[in-house]
Length: 358
Image 1 (tube, helix red, strand yellow):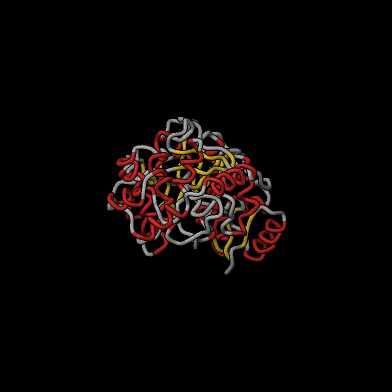
Image 2: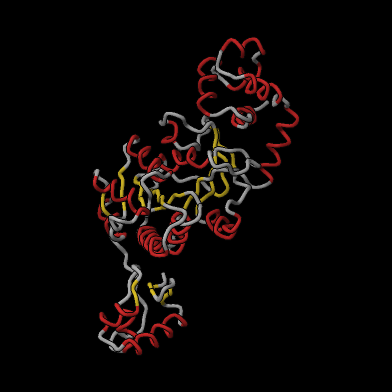
């Protein structure tokens, strides 16, 4: 068998993870040697549970392996083993590097400036809007975005980057031929065209809850910095940030109210030294990049509609507060808010609270 096929086999043995594979390689030195190893030799390593040895032996079927490998290539999935030239060098340096990467689209280019963005799946509308705005701003100025394509902050990060004409990458907790969540089918195709979908799991691997924290080490490793938005104290986002700190990454965080559990993790990280982020410019300043500004297209500021529009931001605001800021009667404010929402310039997020639409 050719080398890629052997690495494909080694990276797709059910129940045998990267740490175990690397320990086997320390003993047998090459995938071909592991493939040729006898049951007795495998038993003597004392590395494999009986179920692992059974799975490894059962998977030694060159004909089936070739069929699976050919099927993967027909689906447009690219394969990079840890021995491949295109495999990212930065991943080889972590404790438990993926044995292989499966990719739809492209891997990041060497030296590509990348910001990892992580946060809550059940985020607020304001958190989603802020994430979108920050990622659009940094993408427009040349920073790529990597995240996990989950609900909430992840998807807002990808969409913001795409709206900023940037490159974005999603590291998945399933095979790259499976869209999870299914509602992100269109988003996943956009990511493929403007970056890539990446997984250490072979095609056909279903999403499982334990796989998502594991994939976060790849997100952290491929980035130069990690941005936290609406991360709880006990969350996968904090695990990602901790792994990032261990790898020497810079941590950034968007602050929140001190009584908001959704921002507790972010606030604690800022207290412990993370860089506070209030806009995309805070990130660009750190990387010494020039901000390219978006023009805020709205009604003329001299008109009532313009005064209402200028009173809004990405932070939810009530109609009463808008009336105070704009100096207009509440009845006129309500009329203008309705018109602005119909024009697609603002969004009502419930309970008579409004934000700019980005």
